[in-house]
Length: 318
Ligand code: TXA
Ligand code: MG
Image 1 (cartoon, rainbow, N blue to C red):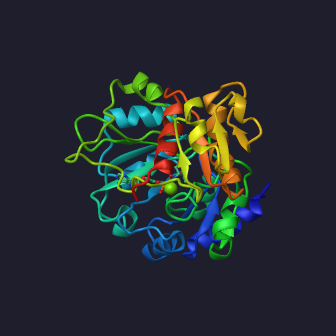
Image 2 (image 1 turned 90 degrees about the horizontal axis):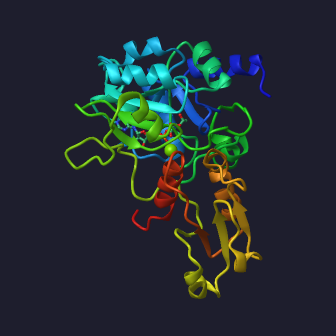
């Protein structure tokens, strides 16, 4: 476990304009001082992230929303009271002083208070909000261990804080409050059901004239190996000559038992499945397979976030 001293060192790096990878309860982030545009620019550079894709600003105290956003609606406040610290990001109209590079020039800002002692200590010690995307190369799977970060970005970041595996395993749920009706921009670690139990109905399909999460390009969260979804016994013949690996929710596919297989949750628990998702896909991706096939996953609760990530990973559109 990384001790207080290391967190101090990490905070010094952030204060000096450096970049630090750190654990959160969802995935590892790659952080910089949100008020230092040059430091934030390095995050974009290291990730090879296009500049039109804004970052989430992480805070250690809900009161800091006031410094970042013009106002917080009562629904947004209710959600932060219920789910912060935790895997929920809210999108609000931004305060002028946030550098444009953080928000990709948008008039809004995404804010979240993570539920991880190291992330919170780092933000507190750095004495600034931390802008951080997931600590992976753009388009690839998010990292859920320090080793995942080291493998991809190791020599390009100033420090990696190791907090072990991320307990939630999928990114935060993003809800926008820019319109009359709250809008779900990305399903994630807090389920839609939980959110609606606090504020009532939430829109789920941003249309063209509505805001979307600009970074949610069709292809995202993708391994190098092609991945297809909704595997069925019928499709076995089609792929019989291929070197395939299986990503299954609970039950092994009987006649494919000898293939490399990752079971997300033997007891059929969607939380456990979410926590295992990215590491399981990475393990399959390391096997040089022709194809990864995923069996269906129930689209309720955290299953929504899992299916969303798999659909993006499987998308053929760039
Ligand atoms: O769990 C998480 O949210 C993780 C950890 C590190 O906190 N972070 C994360 O960041 O997933 P990233 O950059 O990989 O995804 C952030 C998403 C992007 O799709 C981006 O487009 C969207 O948030 N986003 C950021 N600011 C936005 C804004 N002002 N309006 C709409 N979407 C925004
Ligand atoms: Mg990401």
